[in-house]
Image (cartoon, rainbow over the protein chains, first blue to last red):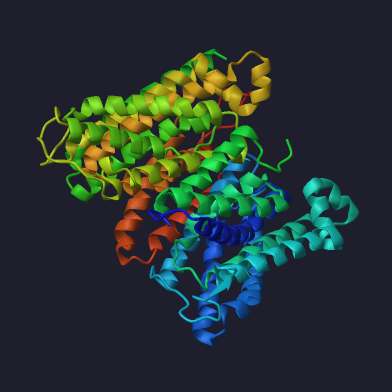
Amino acid sequence: MWGTTLTAQAIIQSLASGLLMGLLYGLIAVGLALIFGLMDVTNFAHGEFLMIAMYLSFFLFAFFAIDPLLSAPLVAAGLFIFGAVIYLLIVRFAMRAKANAGMVQIFTTFGLAIVMRGLAQFFFTPDYRSIPQSWLGGKTISIAGIFLPEPQLVGALVSIAAFAGLYFFIHRTDFGRAIEATREDPGAVALVGIDKNRVFAFGWGLGAALVGLAGAIMASFFYIYPDVGASFALIAYVTVALGGFGSVFGAFAGGIIVGLVEATTALVLPPSLKSVGIYAVYLLVVFIRPRGLFGSI
Amino acid sequence: MMDKDFAARRRRDLIIAAVLAAIAALTPLFVKDVVVQNILILTLMYAGLSQSWNILSGYCGQISLGHALYFGLGAYTTELLFTKFGVLPWFGMLAGGVVSALIAMGLGYPFFRLRGHYFVIATIVIAEIGLLLFHNWEWAGAAMGITIPIRGDSWLKFQFLRTKLPYFYFALALCCLAWFVTWWLENSKWGFWWRAVKDNPDAAESLGVDVFNSKMGAAAVSAFLVAVGGSFYAQFVSYIDPESVMGFQFSLLMALPAVLGGIGTLWGPVLGAAILIPLTELTRFKFGGSGRGVDLIVYGTLIVLISLALPRGLLSLFSRPKKTGAAR
């Protein structure tokens, strides 16, 4: 868009793509918000979870020719197990730290992120990969003269569906209520027979499964490489913080804002500066509301 | 606070530091290998940087993962003044420090209202913004960066062609300076204020501690020293671009030694750097060339294990059980 004249058409076009991307950002970020809300832990390896999901989707395509869209539930299931295992093997112990608890959590998950990147380089090489031919990849759909790329469109729909499902799950099922109860008072739930560790492991699994879903969809239109998580992770933190840490539906709104701001910035600044808009909006929001848009004060 | 034990401990710390510095100063007599010298220089530099980071993040408790901004500002201020206006790096170093300290305080106004994750993310974000702006700033070389022209081989120009030894001694001096500033501030009004702010800002405020200004003071000192490190690094590697002086990895490499050694302690950063930096460089030297990430795997595993096993850092291995709730 840079350098071209801004017509109403171009603006609507870019806001529409921004909205789609924003819904996807929301889906990437919601797992982070869920885990934070549940147990006050920020997963600094969240971007690497996304990276693993993208690779999983890639290999399912490369070896079994399963389209990313079909493999998305498989990838989500794989990530669910991965997230729960990471909780049980590592995070559970990080939460027991008696001193510097915040620091320990930050650096344990950070260390994990570095290991995951290293492992990805070791096993998958640093090469950029992409899924050349998928059902959606490279296709666009035209609605009233506005072109929407199909992978992003489907991603946005999946994101809306996932948020709806999550809402239903948290408010309407016993396990969802157990999650809500645990986040309110992890000590008291033990008295009514809820195993805190099981809920936390499930929370990590669910958070990872959601980012897995996002990764599977992104695999069909984005390059896949060991460091791919880093840039999306920062956007995810900003998204979550915008919405207010721990607010699952704040992440939904945060994602949409981030997507729209990114698209708008790309209209007025060189494309390489498009993230500056997102970061500036983050700073602006937290300066006015130090706990994010939907965070409790 | 200022009982006999405490005064004795401070004297002991000073003596240990002097002895260690003297030993460090003599190592180049025995170490002639350029690769090893290089590792020693980086170790001293990161020890100094981490010590400076520790003032804001460890003592004052405001965890910054955006100190790469000040490191990069130090490097860029020095080299822009040097290449565009011919200003000697020594003045550039000072200018970089002042610019960084002023920016740290300017950012402090809005930033220090934030707490917890909101603050940490704000620091990451502001360093990212700085990185992107330098990437797009044509006059400052944009993504191509600045190659520092050779204008001499002397302390005056702070450029050395034949030997790395002067860089070694400067890095040692920087490390000693950062340590000494920490040692000195630890026992000043500021040191006590910082610990109070870290433990409980609301309680500190109600007891008359000027919370906001103590954070500002810590940020200014911390940013100044880190910027001096950035100036040094730019002269040492003689080429800078946005990624190589303002990238996120510097923020991490400043934080990690302090965290591993013992955050908010006098000796933590030095101890952490002495272990972490040689290990990083050696794993990179041994496995890094393969491009297969073995260095990352070793390094990351170490971070996870130490964080889990020793939440207070390696220093806690040496500490005896405390008699009372002493200052540390």
